[in-house]
Length: 184
Image (cartoon, rainbow, N blue to C red):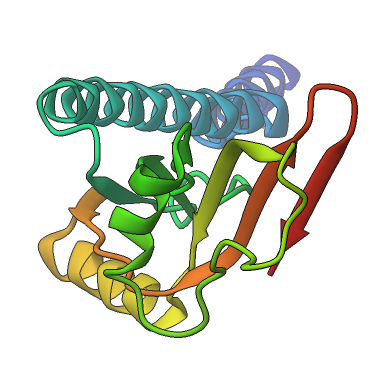
């Protein structure tokens, strides 16, 4: 074989070798590009979830304008976004405040468990200033709401919550200068 022939075969072989290396390099994306694609997808999922959450809150705001005494539990899935945060939050009257003892008793009389009563022996100069109830958070209700949301394939899901027990009660009386606060 002549030198020219050997040189031509070597050149063609080199070209084939380098072109196959180039094809292999183009087929496998670089780790940086892959990382950017993953982060972009996660960011898009997070933005979509936040949009769904805002839409659900707006929807509940409209309902609560008509029925301000209602309470809604909202479930927000952290599964797809891998974002840690509150899975549940409440909207509406989960902690109602009262300006009169009669209004407080109207709600308190519907509750199970301990309810604070106005003390029978109280200095005359003290009058009812305000009352506040905080509804009990029912873990079982939250589990059921989460299961229902997953069954329906929803990342943001809400349901009306009828709380029947108070987690805490605060009654405040005042005489103008001093306050008497009862907490249960």
